Length: 297
Image (cartoon, rainbow, N blue to C red; front, top):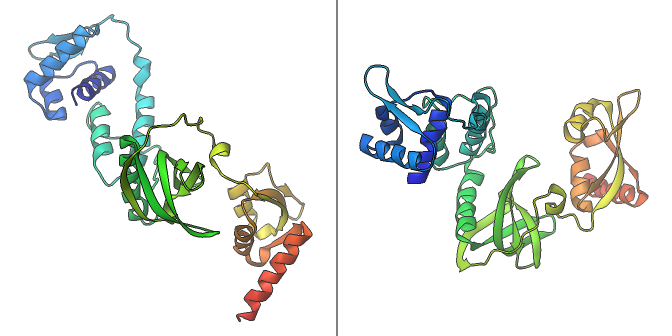
């Protein structure tokens, strides 16, 4: 806590030319005497801090001392605060709010030019899981859960290494004992998540890479044509470079998918606005699926 507080004091002094001991004491909820001791420690660390008494006085970094203030410019601090607000959106604790208050020079969080909301429509669906997994990562403790995937449900025991937000969803990435390899698991598909109480020694994990972390063994490739009425969705999901657009606005996309069943489910989400062009086996398989759906009605 002491070093965190001293870093917070330096952060404020880099943003404000002068601040009083009383203001710092109130901000960090400690006594003025504690703030004075922190200032002495900062001085001993080689950063000269001066105190001026009387009206208009206060604590500041010695004028002329060369310190890279661009480490925490106003714009960059707003970027940091925006990121912390994003984490706060999926946190069930007040840790990020407290950190934002400490880093903000005047105690007021202003990061409304960039708003990051990482929560799902049901915040509770992932917030509790994120907190439990963070505890497991920090304590090097294995987690276990039931996982639901297109291939069915299975029980997993995992050494968690990272929480990842990508593809608009939260995932936990780690070493899966059941598969003997690194795997990513979508948090919304986890059930019965718990700490096992069993510790693990951290492995030499590979460097983070979206391609490496996305497990797509046995992936398929297909060519699909989409109607012009869903052009907005194609651009939203694939951008403007991957699809080939015809003059009438229709789009043709060649893309890979993890497995055939989930590929069919994705195409179904477009209703009659999508057509599988190739390969023929997928056209035939999709046709059979549509027949089975029709038989139900």
